[in-house]
Every structure is written in C-alpha cells, then in structure tokens.
Amino acid sequence: MIMQPIVLYDLAGKEPGQNHSLATAKARYALGFKGLEYTTVRVDIDEIDSILVKLGAPDVGKRADGRDRHVLPTIVDPNTNPRTIVSDSLLIAEYLDRAYPSPSKLVPAECKVLYQTFVYTLDQLAQPWDPYLWVRCIEIMSPRSAETFREFCTSSSGLAWEEISPEGSERRETHKKALKKMWDEVDAWYAMSPGMWAMGGQFTFADLEVVGWLKSLQHSMKPQEWDEICQWNGGRWKRMVDGLEKYYKAD
Amino acid sequence: MIMQPIVLYDLAGKEPGQNHSLATAKARYALGFKGLEYTTVRVDIDEIDSILVKLGAPDVGKRADGRDRHVLPTIVDPNTNPRTIVSDSLLIAEYLDRAYPSPSKLVPAECKVLYQTFVYTLDQLAQPWDPYLWVRCIEIMSPRSAETFREFCTSSSGLAWEEISPEGSERRETHKKALKKMWDEVDAWYAMSPGMWAMGGQFTFADLEVVGWLKSLQHSMKPQEWDEICQWNGGRWKRMVDGLEKYYKAD
View 1: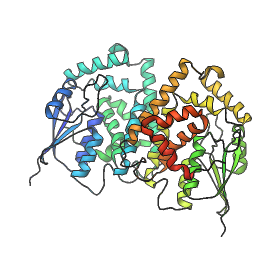
View 2: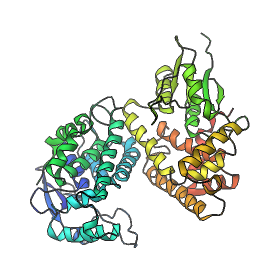
View 3: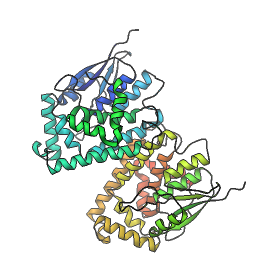
View 4: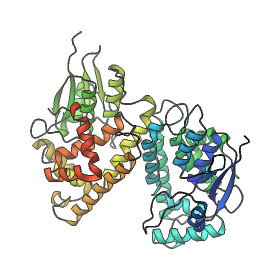
C-alpha cells in the first residue's frame, strides 16, 4: 500500500515556514522521528474551533464558558480506515507510537503521567516571562492571527499592547531574568541525567517539550537574543535543538 | 552476616511517632518497601547542620550565605564498610535500590530527571497553601523545633505568627482553595495513568512524593480536615495512603 501523507494542522505564519508554536513543533518532531511524510494546513487562531469541528476532531476538554475546547496541533491520518484524527501533541505522539511502532517509543506507556506533569511544569516556569515571547511571536504570525492574539494578550494581561514587555523597560528586564531562571532550573534537572536527554541516551516526549519551547524561541526571538540563549548553560540548549534538527521540517 | 539496623535521622516531634516531614516520610516508605530494619534519631531543626557535619554527612549544595546545606532525611547504613551516609530522599531511594536490589526499583535510572521535576512541581503547587500546613505542623513539633520554625515562618512571610493563616480568615479560605486546587491538578495527572500509581501498577518514587505530602497532611491537620481530604477526588488520596501503609513505620 502506498502511504498517503499525514495532514498536520498548524498555526498560520506571516511567511512560509514561520512556526511560532511550541505545541505544533512537538508534532513536527514526532512525525519526523517516525519518518512520516506530512503536509501542513495553516489555520488562523480565530478559525481553530470552526475548522476542527467541521473536520470532526475530538475536543480535548471544555472551555470556561462550557464550549468544547479544540487545539492545535491536530493531525489527520488518511492511511487508516476510517481516517484517524488526533489533537494535542502528547496524544499525537502516543498515536504515532501505536500506529507506527519504532524501536524507541516517544511515550513509554508508564511515562504518560510524568510527561503530562513535565508539560505542566515547563508551562508554569514560562508564565513569568511569556509576555516577552508574545511580543516576538506576533511579528511572525499572519496578520489575521496577530490581531486575534493581540486582543487575547491585552485582555488576559489587562495591559495595553505597548505596556506588555516594552524594549528597555524594567518589565522587560524582569521577563529576561525569569527566562534565564527557567532554563537554569531545567539545566539543573538535565544535569542529573545519565545521558544527553531527560531519560538518558534516547530522546522521548519530555525532550520534545523542552525542544518545542526552544524552537519557539529560536523562531520568534531576534537573532542576537537566540544567540545568547545558545550560550547559556554550557550550550545545552543549542546541542538539544541541533540534536533533533534532522527530524524537523519547517514548511 | 547479621544485618544491623539502618539509622534514620528525622525531625523531632512533640510525642513519639509524630512525624510532620514529608521528606522523611519518603525515606520511611523506601526503607519499609525494602524490608529494612531501622531506628530513628530525632533532631531539632536548629541542630540539623551541626549534627550532620559532625556525622560526616555530605552536603547537598550551598545555602544563599555560602555555607554547606544539609538536609533530613539522612540515613547511616552500618552494613557497609565504611558505613554509608546519604542525605536527601531521592538519593536515599537510589542508594537503597543499589545496595538492596528488589524486583521493583524505587528510582528506575532513566527516571531520575523526571522524578526531580515531579518533586519540584509538587513543591511549587504547595507554596500557595503551605502556611496553612505550617500552623498545623507547629502543633506536633518538639517545642524547641517549633520555636525555630515559628521564627522561620514569620521572617520568610513577613507576617506575625497570628496573621499567617488565621482560623476563619479570608487568608485561610485562600489557602484552602489552593490546597484543593493542588490535589485536583494531581488527580487529573493520575487519571491518565494505566494503573493506581503514576507509572502504572507498581509505585515508584514519584508516588512516594505524593504520599509523603499526604502523610504530612494526615499527621498535621485536624482529624476533620484530613477526613475531608480523604473524600476528595473519588477517595484517591486515602487509597494511596492506605496502599502504602504496610511500608510505613511511625516511631
């Protein structure tokens, strides 16, 4: 049977290959690791719910207002009958392990709880500096997504857009310190590993979470900001991104 | 060779068997799981550094003021030559896995980074309600430790002792909500496990971290407060504490 390409639903960028989402980066790495061909469908932020509902994608829980919550990444695999639709990077990695077994699993069954916790923890560590990334991300989003995102950022922060993380401000300095603090913390964890990756010599989903964050920084931050991050913690972050580069396709 | 009991250094309580430390509870579970005999030496908070330095215990890093940092639990194993001294519950669990192999490992080698992250995350989740536990813990500490602890709490919070978590106050309500929020979060993670424990059907160090927190609550909170926690999340927390009770010795 000839394999048909999997379809990956990703966020819309300003230019082709401009991916700012850490979540969809994880799906790209997972697909690349399994050696699977895929094509990308770009979706603007305000279209996510309507497009995924029309597609028949399962919800991943409820929103505060009671509506079903849909998320990217979502993949459609046309090689199963019926076609398989999976949303959420951890569930996608688990699905790919089942449907396309490889000697190394992305999500060993017994690790799902720990990986979910790991995702939660990195997200918490990012919150104190996230606005710094917001103002960078918006530069590489499609104009339509940028407009939606700007509204989200101002309403959730209660600040005018220009106040969120102004260049040279005290608030930006606080964000920079929190960014460095996160990676120092993660570095201390990785220093305890017997290998380069969280669980030793082979990367798994936990590492995809870390490299997903890094990829989002690499794509969104200014070149000199990214260069600085590459020098932190003995170059650990550059080594990790470089180590997975062969599995990453930007399209 | 006749095995000599391991010596566990634990914090001093008001009465025998009154253990309020989640960290030393983890060591008790680990020793119990390995079926090892142990005796307890009680140490007041202000004596920890001097006693552990005299014992020759390794430091576990530096304090902000540059002095070596020592922690409980610490164990001394007289069954090795020379005797082995280990501080910190994760390092103790790893040591016991090496020195007293069992079919199930407390810390599978590839999980150390994830377990360290898990410990960090639970600690972060506890911070918003920790003062509620402080005012309970102090009731079962030795008077001398209680005095030191009270000073620590007031200086680190910047509040008078009576203001830290007063019964019936708005601050106490905030603490109660944060306590519930933590266990709802952890419940959502465990709901994804294929078994009762974080990694499935067999408990590991991650579960000791959870049950360590619960044991600290069980010992420190008022009976009706503990009863309420036992009813949360479908009774998950009671089942977990009960599930490990055979490995726990309160002395």
